[in-house]
Length: 358
Image 1 (cartoon, rainbow, N blue to C red):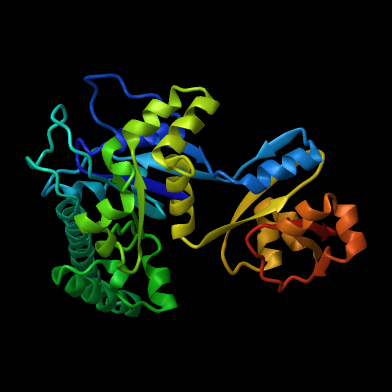
Image 2: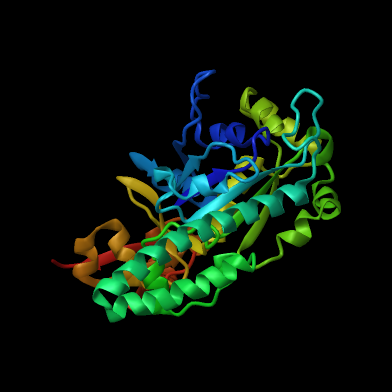
């Protein structure tokens, strides 16, 4: 999964990206450029499997993040042509909620709802520019050859243009499977699901839910295709410098059940309807990312295409049952280890061993 981290300047976007991925800060004075980084998806189930199997290697699921230069009002169209944004599955919009006398807001005041609406509009305008350019090329092509495929695509893009001119994002446009296939090769940004990462100050963290409600972000994020996650980049940066026990005590003092970074990663992971199945053994314990609703034979492809091609059966046990039993052998004795066929729909947390023959 590839996710772009976007936001206005001075919102804490790059700080959050660096904390999520462990990527060092860019040199001062350099030209702002998109940066790539990888974050591990926290999964206590994988840690438990590693304790049980003592594998030589433990491999978590990952999320790829792209740190995009800050967007200014009226400059959203520049995002469409950024190579780093091609193939992005979702957006994390870091919204500034914290106040600071040292870091000025580019619009002169902190207003999270205004900023969330503004960036959403910038994405719409960026897509409108791209749609209009594509319509121009289609018109020229139709004049020359009048291909039925171009005519059909023009009809689709006229609909998209009408929605965007009405300031509606493309994620709100109803599309059939064929239309979605046609749009797969375009990098339309307002079509992507958005996670609003509300960047709070330390004094706001204790009442995060109240701050999100009073700011209007909670209501704004109830739209289809949106998610909302409170985080505090300043606090996360401070905790990153502490020993694990000290960081845990700091979180408990603030009333936080888990690191905010873990919450951002998991929420952006889940926003796309992704789940993880697990494999476990002496060689490796690993989490594999699939779409919710994926069938067993297609899930096998994530490991290797040969396993999909030669699929026979899947040995499946729910993680909770394996953890309670203590071993695969115990699950087999209890009957909780099941044999499933290729049509079985994999569930989040399934521990699977695929039987195959090529």
